[in-house]
Image: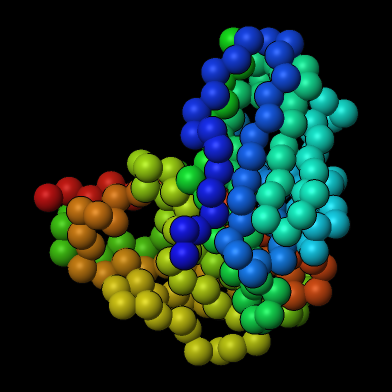
Length: 115
Length: 115
């Protein structure tokens, strides 16, 4: 299995630009999670989907952030317009909700730098 | 809301020795899951070990074991026979058994392994 795939691995953009992060979950997994990691705030959940439906988006910072999951094999996290404080590593994770643990498998992350 | 606290920002261990990382959490629930994730410099999040709250037996995975004290809300990780490849950030995480699949992470502990 290829694991969770994220693209791009690195993104450098200028303030005000639109940024789109992409994620392909592990085949057969029905939950998908977007996390953000910063030095100040650590790892925090932004949003998660179950069966392509957003279940909890309480961690989405503000209206500049949006996430979609049009099908079971693809999700995007969009920031528009981007700001320097959005600089962070963004992780996507997926899980299969058929075991009690529902353990999450993480992608390699996207390091975003907003200048 | 649940919180997870890792009180040790950094721990140093000699190769082949043992190191214990502490983790405490705050919850009013009785049914939940606890995890330890490892994040090496590659920044990939790797699941190390997991524990169900209703299981009294402490989980073990090769050189990794936990000391789960439910009443004290403590979940420490012991790394035995430390190897250079164990050097990484370690994150403790909590997941409710009833309130969705979101993981709540602690702030992390950096483990340094001295040859």
